[in-house]
Length: 207
Image (cartoon, rainbow, N blue to C red; front, side, top):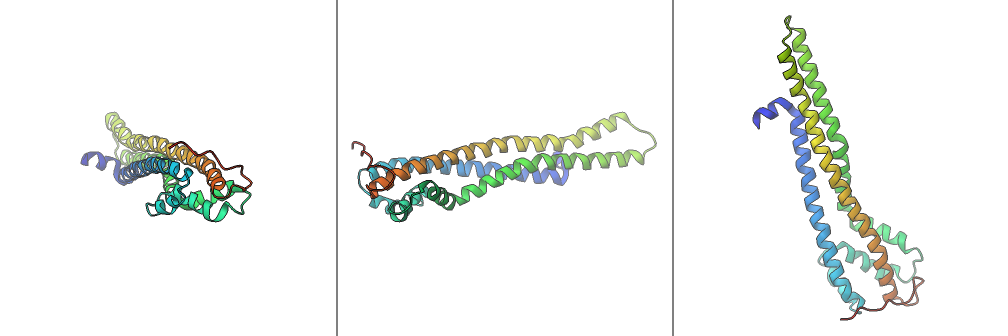
């Protein structure tokens, strides 16, 4: 491993750090979103049965979806006629940390192949400089230098491809949360204010 990083140089260290950071963000927020979804759907059934005080209780558990529902119940159900815009604002507010991590994943997926290419170019420049100072060109040595230089390109692509997959996986999950937030926001508005412009009070599920 030490010999490998001696070959790829500083670019290899940067790419290895980017890969570790990308994996950490994906695992952290992927598990976080799964727990948020499970906890929210489990407790929203109680809210629909009329236990509205659960919204405030759940706030202490830092569930962002319940925080969105809390703000809709307290502030937006009685006056807002554009609930989708309200939910979009609240979603950005309470999922801000996840959105920042998604931006980091996108940045890594774009920068990683460029870093790999830069490492390759620097390696090629170093090799050709050595060849220029050597009057006898060794084909085997030249092929070995090209092979070493191309390692950073392979490394950059190896980081960028899974990071791009991580980016779209989290992004699609967040879009699903946005749709759910709007849907459940309508239900909360109907429960809190049956005369709201979003429709009649929804039917409560059976216990």
